[in-house]
Length: 131
Image (cartoon, rainbow, N blue to C red; front, side):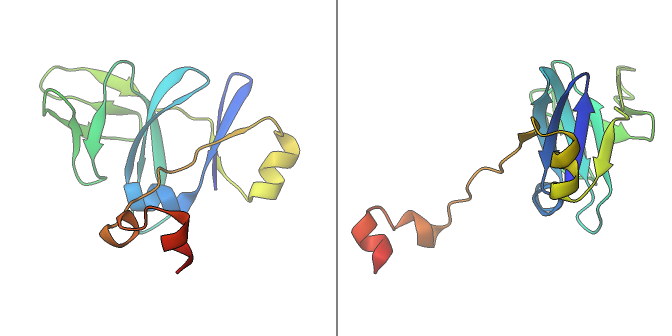
């Protein structure tokens, strides 16, 4: 899992979920962040996103609403058209869940949204699910 600390607050993410999503808009301790993950490794970068919302992948980060492409770098997420730069946040750690929670027991845990497939969408009642 990936643990993020901002101030006295922390939040954790399952690395497999980040690899699958590749890009995630979220908030940690009230700070809007965007996490960008490699689909092939445990490499994740986290940037303060301010009022921006993003979609895409590690290959192409696009701002929602403007469709402008932002460039990933070690220091910042950069919009070369406008010159805007969003700072990378340094307080993140890859850890085992039990180890992280022993140091930070009040950590929030990010839960990926449930993905509804056509097969599971048809299961609408408990009777149908039990079949």
